[in-house]
Image (tube, rainbow, N blue to C red; front, side, top):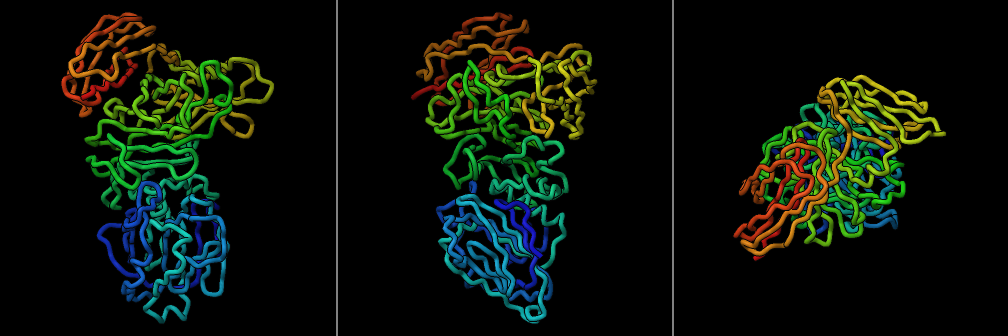
Amino acid sequence: MVSRSYPWHVFSFFVSSLISTIAFSQNAPGGVDGQSLWHAQTNLPSTIGNHHTFNLLDLENEEDLVNLQGASTLFFVLKPKSLSQTGGEFMGIGDIRIFDDHIQFGRVSSPIRFTEDVPAIVTIETVASQRYARQSRAPLTVGDTSLFEIAELVIYPKSLSREERRKVNSYLALKYSITVTHNEDEIWRDYLRADNYTYWNRQIDGSHHVRVLGVGRLDQQQFLQTQTITTRGPQVLVALDEVKSIGTQPNVEIEDDAFIILSESKQQRSQRLSCSSGGHHPLSQWKLQLQNWNSTAHQLIVRIPLHEKSDENDSLFLTDGSSFLYLPKNVLLADEEYQIPLILLENYRHYYFTTKSIRDCDRFTAEVTNNELTVSLSSEEEEKLFVEVQDMSNGSSIRKPYENHPVSNVLGEGQYLVKIVDENGNMISSKVIANTSSTEAPFQIAKPTIRLFPDPASRGQRTTLSVQDITGDHPLKLTLSDMQGHVLEIEDLPFASSFDWKFDAPEVPGIYTLSLYSGEITYTVKLIVAQ
């Protein structure tokens, strides 16, 4: 029996054979104990995700003398080097042989289709044949190593339960940025943790299923990742505090069982509209969540390459539905980079990237007054549309038809994702809102102009922060902090819609952060102090 979970990313096979393997490890992939081989030594310059690959020849001469009398489960992380499939053999273990276009087990063969330069997780389950059950050796043979890159190989001398296979697959998917959210079987779409909770699950995070990235640490599965990068589609790199070369992890301390998970939605129809204020930002489909986060890292860095850059008029914000954090660009780089101050984010809250250009293109308004949500479309629609309100704490949702008059829902306290969808459930536009049980919670974004000059500044040079058109009437607070998060200067100011604040640049060269607090909204800009 052969089953294919998703044709480009995860392949599962059930075969009759036996695999004998070697080497033992203290911890386990996905927290699933009992592996007899777990190899991910990084000794080649090529990478899958942010991890180097290894040479199969390193395993060829190992003593594979484990006596196996039953079933086995194997996991491979592979990336094809070419789509020119020739039927060449990459490797064999016992009765199993992996070719560039099929997998063969004994006399049975099953085709497999890869996408060039896109990695995949291949899972093979074996049931011992009578011939192999009497043997204790299953040698590894190396074929044409130019066919694939291989980053990790895990072998269990036993059959794993479905839940155990999901945990190992989730560990590999998060480590190598291999999307598993599109599997035909819905239960395989969740990223399952070793403790049976989820990093990402389809019920809560299902609107953001295109790609999933993660940084964090879990000692139980020897997982420590402080930088990661997408492996298909437009490139997005995520790192803590600093960006290293691909295949290298920044040296940042993270507490055990702490993670940051990012996920991407499909481009919504409203994001494809023509806006007078600019084009579509590549990050506007992403969201992030801190999970049990505890780290010395001060910044989460998100970088996109030059050819994916946004329109110059697209300002980027991070919102939880109640406040908006302005994310300035790092103007010193050719690529586009944003730094998110982690101290301003809360654990388990969902934060969405958004831009003012998308706001200008929105097709609906969503306002909460006295715990009642009212949704109105900006114009009458000929097609049949629905308003869907999803509770982000548990994933439950309510869908109501929109019949060219406002739709209302009573909300409890918490975060909600409000979506306009068509008859097929395709998302046309969406907004996150937060109900704090206040009497009025308007969903409105502030759009001040914030400039810093000169920037870069010389050591001790007189510098000006110029703020124009800030909204609201809250008292203001300004802070200047270094890259370690230490506050060097703080000043409270009465509200003014426009003002200039002058200060002396620090004497020590480096990158500093100026933060402007206005009620629940925080804006930040970077100051470069040159040598």
